[in-house]
Image: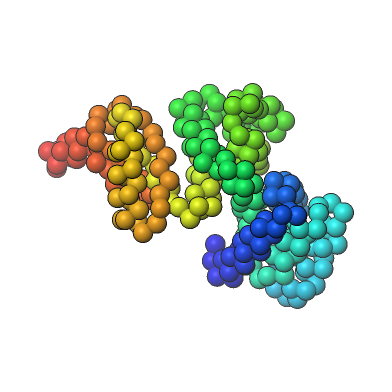
Length: 271
């Protein structure tokens, strides 16, 4: 997301923060309504182009959005979306992506207010690992021929009563409305948003055996010093790495595993 869209999203995040700080706004309910707006705008391509048309004034675009949404979603959602529509956007899709992000952020805010955000972070990561290791499950969740209802029922059978309701809602929305993303990319994006609620980055740590509490604390402190911010560690155990650890932060990978050292030695011998 570039230029005008990035600025518009930043302003919308600030407005969402102000709304959810109010005791009169139910963050979880707001999340559901923003998700419904996302689905509506994603479906109505011509309309979202009108709502982001730079030829029209921001005030006119906002008034149109307000008329369309009135009676379908509550005042906070109307105010937030009309404010977004008044802003300038580089691409019409950026508006939809941003409303979708705010829906997820509102749900994560609800989790934070209920003191279960850490649980949601961990559940999103663990679910991603389950999908990664189960090809049949991944195929079922990404099958374009399967209905949204069937996928929702499958997810409820897996997560209902086991995961936090916020986790289940986020995963259901991602699976039933992927909007061109892979399941893995969508789960990673949700994990980053969850970490951002605490002003933390996410580090995916892979080791041959589980790390001790002391090792986790030392690694977290070292990464925080290296990256200049607190880190949320998503821990993955993979015996095939043989020993050592691999750390991935965004696109950057620090690989200190024995398997990688052996692979590097083999490459040198072959070269």
